[in-house]
Length: 567
Ligand code: WTA
Image (cartoon, rainbow, N blue to C red; front, side, top):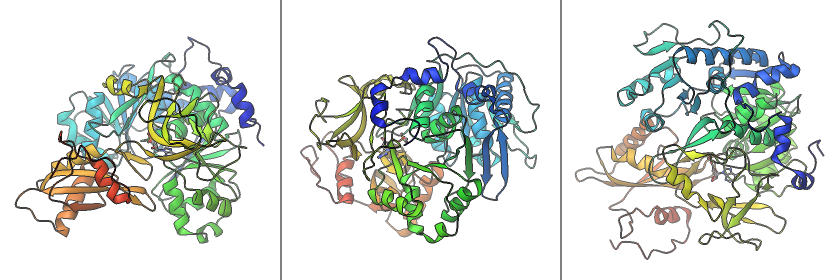
């Protein structure tokens, strides 16, 4: 049993005011996430405590205390202000997991900007779609990603500043490109932090949809109230913990829990800026004596594949609490982790839109492997009927996961797309777009997504964006993209393609198309498999029925095809 109290007790007595009180926040007060994560922790007497232990694939290590973080985020904020950037400006972070990404995020918030993190493996097309939508004013990047930024400048007149954090003078920067060295810049001890209020926009996270462009889920500074308390209760962060969130801040897990929730609790965080490699991960845990580990099912399945040998070579006894997010966590993975680490991974469920965990396994609660757990105290969640959106009261019946609006970290709109935002609310509920059932004891069991969005390795990829990229290939006449089951990544991208006259299916063409998508979008969006077809199944109104193609891949019933056009 932990100090946070049992789930039942918490659920009975919880109000968000508990979090507000702990954070000394009162209605109408200033609330700035940048301040809360650094200055406030220093004021609490932890200025010399380590905030960040960073390591990259070469073993290079950098360490920063909370005071370093306070000053460096001030330095970044002051720099942005000097450039003429204003509160409310969208400022993109397009970098690997370097310290500048983490401190840049908080620095932007400190000067009132809206932080727009984007996954650094995105190609130019993925980048420009999201920057043009947000009319982004400045971008932080690294030399290795600069070419992709240069590619889009002609389409991005709003982008005034390209800030390169690791320029070494080896290749000249161009006009409008600025070299900024966080560690060499004159340190700014005092900065007048922007007096943001609860509803001041903070973060803009792009997430994939079924049709149209990716949507920018807009969050506000008040999200801190949820992120702080969920990190404290569910991740169980305590003062002496060494915490590792494996997610990239290009995605919401990497900001809500890889930056905000953890640092607002004053936790020491470790960041490993390198790809996945089981033995390197275990060495990292051993070396830094990591105690709390937040990861994802794909990573866990990849670790399972490597077996127990690499685990036996390391001393992982520092670990005391494990959690997972992003995809369904298989019961086998929970059982395996109990066997090899002596600890189960606790599943947590949430979305970019929810901003923080909404359903989870709570420390001390009975775990049912394969279940996502129960609603966080303060969250009212249920499943609703697929058509009427009425809550389903009978156990075991599948419906859509729905959450009563009003929790602090709920997204406030989709950027430029208020209609889609509104369409997410039905019958007084926020409708998640995921299907689940609830058992007699109130545990949620994930069933699947209700739309065509593909969840590959915990990352959502929209079919529309890939289909649009495919159409730009000279050989492609039309295409449909679906998720195909995969033992490690849960789903991978599969493309059905009808070729233009004069083109013939071949292995070379396959590879050429795959690479074409990888370069434009990202490796995640690249089809792992291409099937050439004569034509695609469509409704009478001409909409591609991805559901029909998907059902074949999953060996499921095709369902109602009454609207299917006769070929
Ligand atoms: C899926 C990531 C099953 C789900 C924080 C959701 C999950 C989408 C779980 C959000 C889980 C997330 N079990 N599925 N524990 N957690 N998902 O916006 O489909 O990148 O809607 O946010 O991931 O992905 P997003």
